[in-house]
Image (cartoon, rainbow, N blue to C red; front, side, top):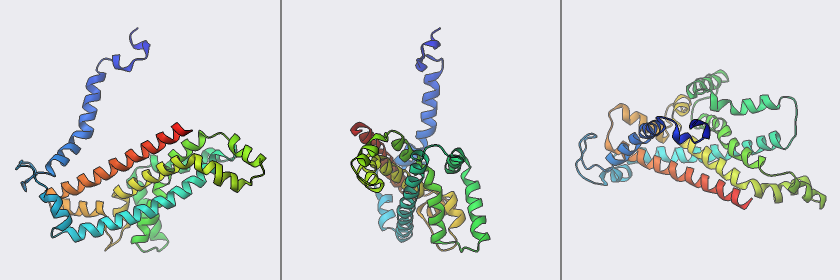
Length: 270
């Protein structure tokens, strides 16, 4: 049979399904990017190429609100991704370098749980938890929630990298009288550094772009860029919102691309 050859391109309808999926995923993004350069104030009528909406984002009437929200998003994303990366690195070392132990499968399930649970459920549960312990919603609640939510995203590339590094390097270092800490710092850490960097970048993007959890736990008076965009869209979609969305999309693409090439260069060096 032709299908038995394993060439998925020969499946009937494969090309159509592929093109349809790509259009559904990326055509709306391309439309938003295109109309962010529209000179017209209408979001449906093309009025010529212009950068006026990007100028309005940085220097317009609402620029102060956008800049403050962007600064909050960046600071929270950096702090949350650093915390998530440190915790994820420790978790990966414990899961992969500690051999077999009771509860290992359950621990991996707990680490991966935020990836499987709907984000709205996580947001509601986090809000209920903070309310139950009397923790006032604000900047710190966003930071804690983002740090916890980003752990599995940082864990996956770190664990994948760590699984590809054999223990013989550390054993050889300790045979040469290095302590366990020295073997980790001078041997293992440089080998898994590409995975750590990739995990940090992915966690940063997840935190920067998050809206649902942030909207539930942010409290009054604290805004991030996604929540500001949502508030502006509720009053009607304007071209400057498309410009901000395009900038966030480009930042996400850059960080994901860097993460990919860092991970790939680490594989090549290994």
